[in-house]
Image (cartoon, rainbow, N blue to C red):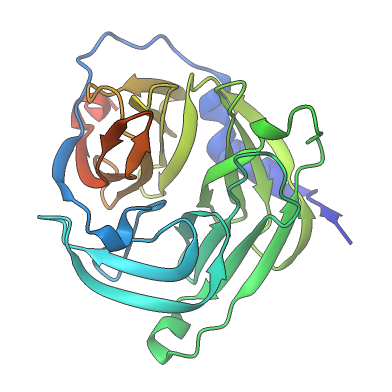
Length: 291
């Protein structure tokens, strides 16, 4: 049975994350930042789809096939550790976490045809024990139809105290819509919260609760990357285009301090154009200075 999301949960989400999008102020003109290259990713991780910190290491994984986590050296992008998890994934596009769990999102749907969207939940304590077992959070979008299905791809979500917030990757509309689902196993209808004018396709999300800061990453039609910044203390959302140019298919984003970010871009080979998979750094201190 599909259970709709109701009650106080929606109110809590609105207070914590919705308000920054409802009232915005004009952005000041600032120099566009550049994501600097740390290094080219090894072939094992060319399909990088996510990025997150765990136990002092920066981890990523591929978007399909065997579920293997790779720890990356933040000085040269080389693999320094790996963890093989059971099972295989179809289009695993994001990993989020809270204090107790990791959430692996097998939620990618480029063509708008999937009926098995789900998030695998893993207790962090099980990683050390070696006895890994997943819970599953199944969900659907109640407003998805055959006509608009390609606007319900999703490659980004974050875990808050009360829910998982999903940000759609809209192939036609080139924006994003935020939906919420519970963090507990079951079958759920995602609850629509708000829309974001990202002017591009969202592929990753990083939420830094200490600063109340949400940063999304993505790219436009030419794979020119951008970030979309929300700071909970200022009721302001801002799209920031990066200077890197075309071909940078950014996929994952992570931070420890809410100011300095790591990103990954996936190996791209299309129409005779090739761009390697890379680990990048992005300094957003100029944009947060007045916060």
